[in-house]
Image 1 (cartoon, rainbow, N blue to C red):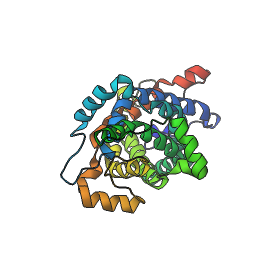
Image 2: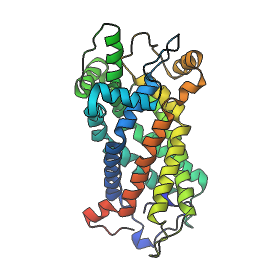
Image 3: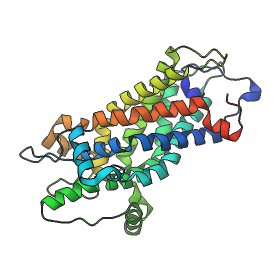
Image 4: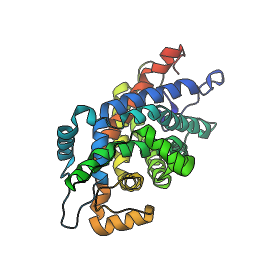
Length: 321
């Protein structure tokens, strides 16, 4: 398995020290596609809960995660729960591949000559991985959020006697590039960076710590048994997801281009934090937190499963190290 699986990594013998990049990229992509397909409806619910702003009299469209799921399914059907999944599945392959591969690469490079990787180096590796991934994550999230939140905005407009034009992800991307150039796709990149860098700093060292506590396989590889890596991925993923949820709320609100009637616009990170805190209180920053934990935990549990099984190595005929 990758070197992200242990805190102290013993380097292989010189003839096997090459960093196998291609299988790591493919494994990351496979893990991302499987994970997104499994949990996307909950991610949609998370987005709608986070974008929902409480009215002056406490009015809101959704009262809870289950209420949002029920109303969305009733109004938009099964396929409505997967609105925006196309762009997510398309871009999740490079996004997850960059994140997981970059972390493994930097851990490989930061490992000392005696085969050790200090906690600070693990955090640096994770942070750099998070920074690299926002190149893909920001436009992916921007387009996905518009698609996911379209049903909520349309429902609010209908109640107000208005209509909202339906726009596809391709049309939206084309319009943003036409109006603002390629940088139009990077709206909210600062908040995305805060979320993803912080998440990676927490997740990867925590996963390595938890994974190192479990029993080892009896094949002499020194790797953790399958279920240990899976559970470590679940625990580290859910913990990191909840910890950075305030950044995710800010990012989601900044990236939402269309708002429902009466909802506030935000000029930037500090403006979003100030207005949200003033009008909705500190608990608003944890909206969708449970959904996000449920979404992120299996994503990374699946990622560790794919790495453990060595799917890409099997396809490419590589010997899994």
